[in-house]
Length: 111
Image (cartoon, rainbow, N blue to C red; front, side, top):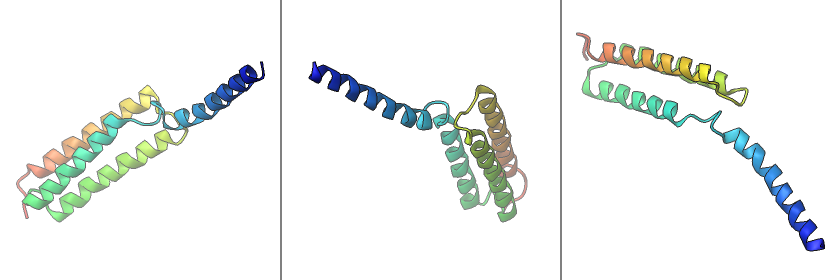
C-alpha cells in the first residue's frame, strides 16, 4: 500500500511540475512559422545588401520594419499566449514587411 501511495504522489508531483513548463513553451506562445518567416526575411535582406539590390538606406529601412515586427511579437507573447487574432495580425505585418523588402530590392536604386 505504501508503494502505491508513493507512486501516486510521485506521478502527481511530476505532472504538476510538467504543466508549467508546457504552458511556458506550449503552442500558444511559440510559433515556429512566424520565426521561420522572420529568419527567411532576414536572409533576403542580407542577400539584397550583398548583391547590391538594397542600398544602405533601404536596408536600414527594411530592418527597422523587421524590428517593429519582433517588438509586436514580443508584446503579443508577453501574457504567455498568442491568440488566433494576434497570430493573424502578426502574419499581416510579416506580409507587409515581405512586400516592402521586395519593393526595395526591385526598385531602380542600387549600390
